Length: 449
Image (tube, rainbow, N blue to C red; front, side, top):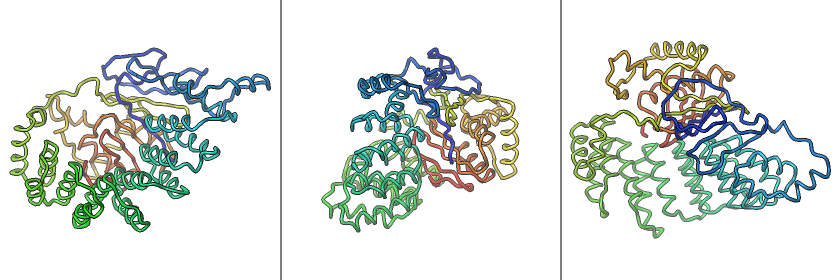
């Protein structure tokens, strides 16, 4: 059982009234939205390019007489309804056995993937299972991709294992899916099985394999796979060379990473020195960090200046958090407590975290305020508030699944690791970089993200 806590991409993308809002001012609120009441949609935004999704409560179905039902079935234009954003009606009609063609299923899976709605994706999957397209390879690949984007690797693997036939894309999706979720060893096992079945890896496969090796610090394996690209007639691209730098950097082999960059036959861009600077910072090599910083300044001054001179976050990028459970949605986008019960829970959790060794890292507060205020600001980062509400709203041991529009800061990353150990739950956070599976005080990313 898992609860989804979704973080929308901009502050204008979620409303709690039927009016659109483009306000960029962060506010303190906890709200419960019923998006299906009276068939209306409570999501509104002047910034959306596509119509909002409407998903109804499956237990509530309109009563139609026989003639109405027949007429509706005959006139149903599912692609048009999807274009208009009437997802609620499309699912209802499909539930009444209205025929959906191949493109409708592809569109529905894309909507599930983009909205990262695991509940919606599972509904669509159930329709596909009962359709004549159940064994289609591309639909199977779309299902894997959707489940990976929603952070449900168990569902993705179940689809993969049950596919009657697979292509190279199927294997690549599973390898990259495991890697994106911090499960490098599982990704390498899938790669090994793929080769045993006689499939030749392609460029995308090697990118994922190098990332998987970096996750588990399998340097020799990664270098061997990089060298083997020639055997398959694959010419390494910038992504592959950068993958080797990440491989060496994650393992702390910084001198080897520098030598590799300097011997690379392609033009070395900003990405290489930015990665090296980050690894030097992580491993405490100040001299190398300064050197990489100087090179970054030459190649792209904005990269270095932006890092050296802190600037307040743009208001339009304020974090927004939405908690979804069945037909209820709760929204968080502020740095203040959202309600008394949640605040009490969070205060207690903060005390436990300090006892467990948590020390606030105030470097991640960019405002010019005193240390005490900085610590308080860190406590009320939006993802922590969402987690606190999830803890008081769900049964023990329920997995909380969180989707965040901004990159998780280093202090929150450390705090959530400690939280996961205290509460005994798996906390899955998807920021704008990758998935983080927090469990028993550890994160699947290995603290590299």
